[in-house]
Length: 298
Ligand SMILES: [Zn+2]
Image (cartoon, rainbow, N blue to C red; front, side, top):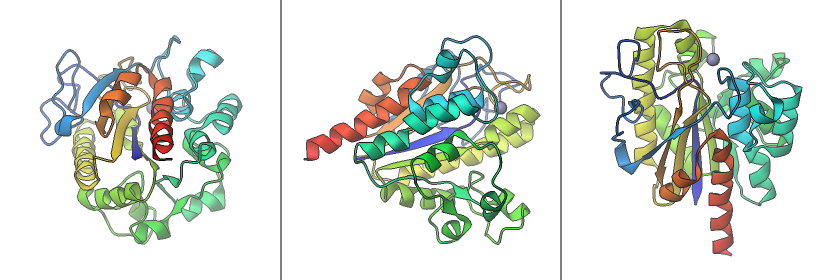
């Protein structure tokens, strides 16, 4: 039994209309989900509209949302605010003590991994503030995947097409969504828990760039369909989620107050979907899924 958590930054469930890039977009399954409509999701996926506001006033933000997703701790409720950008000291403490990687390690679930690629520049320049996931991986003592891993088919960059890496001078080939899916599916097959993260949705949402939004949502949908078609769905649960809405409403440069789509496919999808109401439920649902199965095999 294994789990893939597929994280997309800034994707909410919006209404149809001229400001929603998913409305009328071809090849946008499974991401074409609209408010007040029964979703028809491929491969028996179950859509759970999920609350990213977490009982705290204001627009949901990345640092607090990602901290909550990755720990099961409702960070905005504990701290009293949503926080954008990178986690602050209080959030880093929550991550270091409670991350899903730590919880799974302590339960003896291995191997577990973050599929994303880190560049040498990241290690050389070591930014002062890092993402929730970077902090979680470091605190759990897990290795980062590198550009060399990517070239060997063992890592996926967050911009899975490799376009951004190439623009930054990295010696890598462009990848189609299907090629990136094959690399990610291989990582999933070799691990009990895999996390993959994609951030360009939020960036394009802030830029209110409709043509770019349509292009990346099509490519991202292709990546997801590819992964789902290549992994063993009888022994893998796939959970897709987001930290807050943004790209589904390009009428504003801000994050939205919309629910986000959590979509669950594969093994135990009904049980996992039934367990999720808000972003703090993702980590417990995954830990339960993997540890109960581990116990049953003993
Ligand atoms: Zn944002």
